[in-house]
Every structure is written in structure tokens, then in C-alpha cells.
Length: 364
Ligand code: SF4
Image (tube, rainbow, N blue to C red; front, side):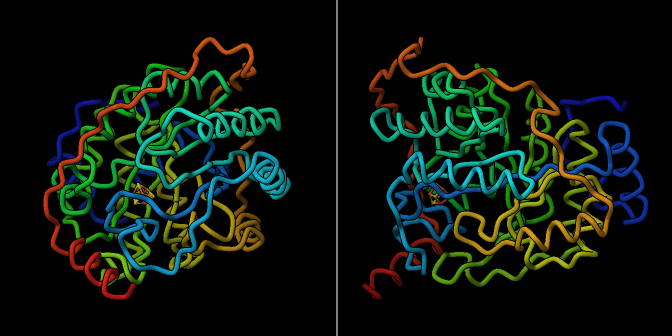
């Protein structure tokens, strides 16, 4: 096993990122084999349980209400509807369901109670349950844990410096505080980011510093390639080069050896050969299903064909950590506190976000 370090510097990470490619691949693949079965890849299904109409201004996101995009919003899905989709995902090889809601933060009340019921229901299907619901308090994290949540996703998105160029409605520190709240429970942490938003290599390294210096390091790190959606402030960004993706995956693997590194958004732009190199470089998780919240994703059958071709097997649920028990709502120790937490709203001006907002107003 290689050592797990929590003191990586930006310079060290940049030096890894910029190694000659063959050397980088060899180093990453070697570390990968020390910590994981290289022929096993975890398959997660991402389900948008509440789409669109979000109050935040994330520059990459078509679900932000202030931008004009093709996304049709919908209210929170019902528990039975979610259960049916989870069963379908399980039948097609997924071990995890990740439920995403386009919320700034979780609010105590009926909707959150409904999400808790979804967590209980999916955990009883013997699948790992993950949620990505925005910022959460310690009590909300405890309620999710008690319902049987396996993982909570909250991405750092980019480096602390570049984050300010993408989002103005909540601070980087809020992201860290939410991760901290999750860490006060047994729920595992899933946190990563997006490349291709116009950031520099230093920002990619900066994001990996922020993630790898967390102690413990996140159990899952999704690496997304921006899908530039028309109407969003980042609509004109060029697609990420496969070589950048491979370098990012390999570097993530080296600085976070135990973590499951997930190929997330942007896989439709990647060839099978490109994805194979990412798996060689240490990626060992993918999102399956024809949609990633609102953006396109490869068909599940195509993924299974690729797995067959590469000799990869889907990871069984609860391979890395035992299944958490589910406590029923009536037996719950942690009740709703009706909290109204004051999460930060820096509200500085990001020019391209403002432009997209004005454009959307003009189109209404
Ligand atoms: S990324 Fe999440 S928080 Fe940001 S605008 Fe989209 S749905 Fe809202």
C-alpha cells in the first residue's frame, strides 16, 4: 500500500499532473493496483428527483432558474416513482443510486421527510444510497445517516480561487462546512469537481489540494468534464481534451490512493479508448444511465458492452463499507429542528453570469 498523505502542496500536485504522460500513467496505475482491484468499476445511477428552478448561480448549471436553458423543471418525485427507477438501475448493474435535487440547501419539512423515505426505501433494496441536495446542517446529516444513507455528494467544483469566478451565491467555505457536517456521521463523502470551466492547471491542482488535505479524504471523487449548455454562462467553453481528463484522473488517483475516482459528466464526448485510458489511470467508478441530471450520458447497454470489451466487472454494493441500518421515521432519534441556517451569500459580481441572466430576461 502507498502512504495516504494529507499535506500535498499545489506545486507537488502540478509536478505530478505535468509528468511525461507514460510516466504519469505508470505511476497512477501502480498505485491503483496497490489499493483496488483494477478490473472492478463501481456503477452509480444518478437520478434527478427535483429538477430545475434553482436559486443559485452556478455558471455551469442549466438548472439555475436565472439562465434560459432547455431544462424543464419538475417538482420532487414520489417515493414509489424513485423506487421503480432504483429497481431498474439495480437490474442493469448499478450498485448505487445518487438522488439529486436542485436545491441551494435542505429545508426541514415535508419534502425533506419525503427524501428520507426515499433513502429508507432504496437502502432496503440493498443498494448504496447517495444524495446530493445542497448544503446541509449537522442535524440534517444525522437524519440522513439514520435513514440509511451511504454517501453524501457535495462537490468543491474547482479551486477556492476559481470557485469565485463561477459561483457568487454561496462561498467555498460553505461547501467545506457541509462536508464537515457529513463527517460527523457514518455517511461517506463524495466530493469532486469540474474541469473545462476556463480554469488554469493551477486551479485543477488547487482543487486536488483542497480535497486531498481533507482528513479523511473523500471516499469518492467525481471528475466531471464540463458539458457546455446553451444559455449558461459557460456555454462557449471548448470541450475538455481527453489528455486533460486522463491527467486529472491519474493525478487524483496518485494523491488520493484509496478513493473511488468517478468518470462523471462529459463521458459522451469521450471515445471508448479514452475511457479505457482513464480506467488504466485509476478511474474506478462511472455514472450510468442515459442522463446525468439534465445532460446526456452514454446508454447503459453501451457501457456494459464496453465493460465486456475491457474485461471490467461492476463492483458489488457495500464492497468498501458495510450497509448502514435503516431506522424507521417513527423510531427516529433525530427530529426535525425546523432550522433556518444562515449559509453565506457573497453576491460578488461575475460578469459572464450577469450577462447570461440579462440574456434570459430579454428572452422572457
Ligand atoms: S449546481 Fe446545484 S446548486 Fe448550482 S445551480 Fe445547479 S442545481 Fe443549483
